[in-house]
Amino acid sequence: MRTWQVAMLGEAADVLEQVELPPPVVQPGHLRVRVLATALNFPDVLMVRGHYQVRPDLPFTPGVEVCGEVLELGPGVAGHAVGDRVIGTAAVPNGGLAAQCLMPASGAFAAPPSMGDAEASALTIGHQTAYVGLVRRAALEAGETLLVHAAAGGVGTAAVQVGKALGARVVAVVGSPAKVDAARAAGADVVVDRSAGDLVALLKDALGRQGADVVFDPVGGDAYDASTKVVAFEGRIVVVGFTSGTIPAPALNHALVKNYAVLGLHWGLYLERDRAVATAAHEQLVAWADAGLVRPVVSERVPFDDAPGALARLAAGESTGRLVVLGAR
Image (cartoon, rainbow, N blue to C red; front, side, top):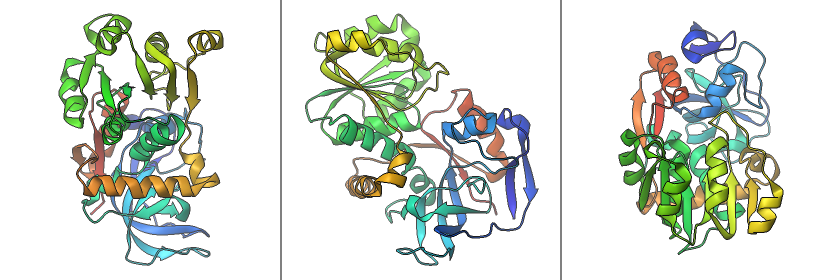
């Protein structure tokens, strides 16, 4: 089968090689699926570089989020059947940038019939991260103000949509004028272009004296620092990633004096420790999708042969929404 494989660490455009491999052997608790579409995520970029917390042995196939058709059930799997269309996480080293991959049954969900393969492939990681972060961790309520960093990207557009579905006022931060429309199309009430001036001043102007009740931060670095200056009394900053490459060192005395909370979110742990949370998130997201409230923003459907270039664009911050690699033909 056709497979993109990483034999040495580095930038995707330099190290991904297309090879022919036999189909993966199904493992206990896993599904073997025919890959219909793979949604690219920043963890794929980090994994290829060797900078992610999960460091598979070389060689490996990246692609952590897929939509696929079940071909085989591993021992101990229940609740799925051959022929089902499923979405969820792939089991690297047998990731989604291949004709077939493995999926842990704990990370697989029924694909929503209302979505095609490309959109469905992008519903799990970004949208569940947004939902669990905003609902379970931050308890965002209708009428509150939500600040979303990197709001034109995959997880950012998901957070904007989830925030609006919950009834929040959403202030979105983007990195360039070219990304303003993407955040606005996702539903943001106000869009701040951080390249237009001092970010703190721009945010204070957009948020007013009240500030942000909840901050959704997949960026870290200067974005996190700016958030601490505009977070409201009893505000909550949800930390979901560090795409800036800089991990903040929170000043806890500042959190004490301003009376705000810093909340970490590692969504994948719920699949291991409390899958009911992920199941509830999936069910609500599908219901919202059916009602037209949320939908993954697929900005580009990428042919299988062009996967390295798509990962390079994601790494460079040039993309908006989700880049989805179509299944190998």
